[in-house]
Length: 73
Image (tube, rainbow, N blue to C red):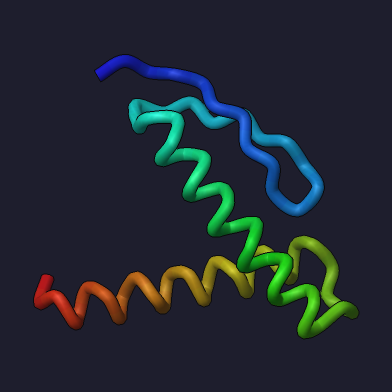
C-alpha cells in the first residue's frame, strides 16, 4: 500500500497524517476525534484542549474495548 498525506482538523488545529490508510478513513477518524472533543468541551467548558483530548481518547478507547468484547475478539 502507498503512503499518503491527509490533513485533518481537530480542536482548531490542522494535522497532517502520514498513513497507508485511505484518505476517507483518516478523515473519518479525524472527524470522530474532533466530534468527541467538541462534545466534551460543551459539557465541561472549563477544560483546556489537552484535558478534553485525553478524556476523548479515554472514551474512544472505552468504546473500542466494549466493541471488541461484544464481537468476541
